[in-house]
Length: 426
Ligand SMILES: *Cc1c(COP(=O)(O)O)cnc(C)c1O
Image 1: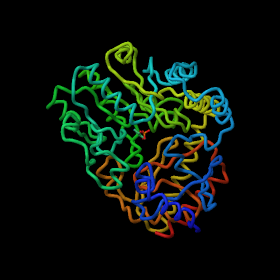
Image 2: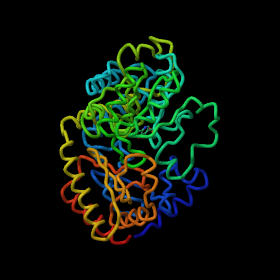
Image 3: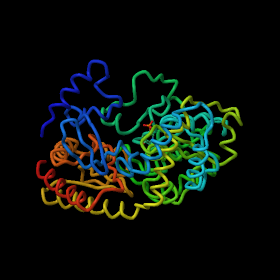
Image 4: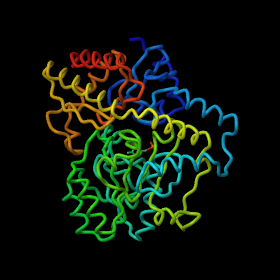
């Protein structure tokens, strides 16, 4: 495979960009190579600067659920660009997107748009603390909730990939109110509850996607909802990744729970920087200007981003690709397991809707500890094998693969063949 131009741009990028990237996972560090520079994308495919074509299963780490260049989204964005980029004032688009989002999440009366998932979560922490008058929060090892200080402990993906316990530059004071529990282990939550009566909120990815895809057991998630309700602790469901991915709405509905605060990002902005947090009216009314929880943003509710979000959700609702996602993910799962068995490789596959990923392990992966025990050397070989076969997956064992609604039968066959070829190389 020819990577000459990517290599050149990488070397050039190193001068004024940190590691030639603007987000660490893009650096390909955990798969021992240099990043591919992308030039354009269309439909299910993405093309690097050397002209190599890939079926895109990264999809910008989630947002591009319709594939690239959906005509309706392009039209909506172009129209808004010609009308005005940003006004620093309210626009009708914000009301339209807010209505769509609130209607899709039963527990949400009101929503506030921000510019990223990180921002949504860090605002939710402040709101939960103000609403409950308590200080501590609980998070689960392996769940990632963005890069704000107080949640940058035992987080997944980037941090797992680089085996860092947290991050330099975060003072102990910033994480002293963050308690860590184990995913799928309700006793680890109950222990904290027994020892601390100052807990404002529990943060969870309803389907974990940042330690690889890990599903909660039915007992665990329902019990979590029950005990938080009993103790007056807010359950903050981080649907930044899962929102609109497995149904039109959230994973919480499929799991039979309702969040106190829901956080969104990725798909809701249709490829533009949008995050959101929403809740029942009594909680959201605590936010400024109605309440005394301050939170603001120069570009929040940006008209172009709102237009992209509205067009994306409208199209998604019309397409209703969720059954197709399940079928295609099942095909990919079977291909992975069959190819692994044929080559004598230990493999487990976890999936939920349009999120799927293989773990090079014999174990069932139900928490962070199990995920970390995977054979990342095998993953690395598999990753480069898929790249050689024109399949672009995230360059980390601990990131989910995503499906877009434009993956054709032909694409799916190519993915299956690519999996077979790449598994032989391990
Ligand atoms: C991506 C992600 C975030 C952070 O969103 P950004 O837009 O990258 O700040 C938070 N939580 C989850 C579950 C995510 O997948």
